[in-house]
Length: 118
Image (cartoon, rainbow, N blue to C red; front, side):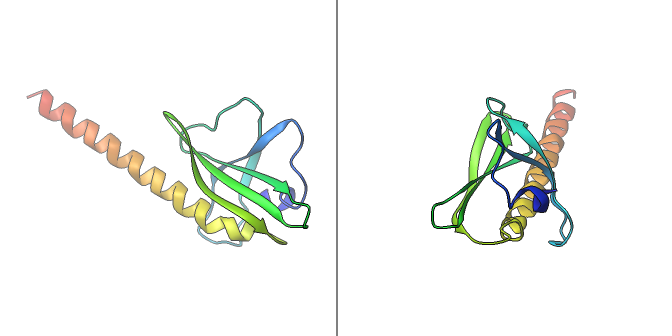
């Protein structure tokens, strides 16, 4: 769970925490698993990376895995305390948007295939 691992530094062998689902309820747990250095975020998954800063805050970055690579979603440079709740809305919205766009892309592909088969 993100809330369990977020207060601690990331393991040296990990690139970040891979998020596959973020429930609409911000109090619901966000399930994550570690992603090794060198591995890319799979299509439709969000990768969270965080680093403690010398002033006691945490720098957090979110990246979205797409078929052609990864894109930066957001960066939070100076979060304090339980930052998992701060990033939750972004996780939920982006994962939902990606799912909707994937569905629309598949529907468009199917419609084009049906038109081509005439």
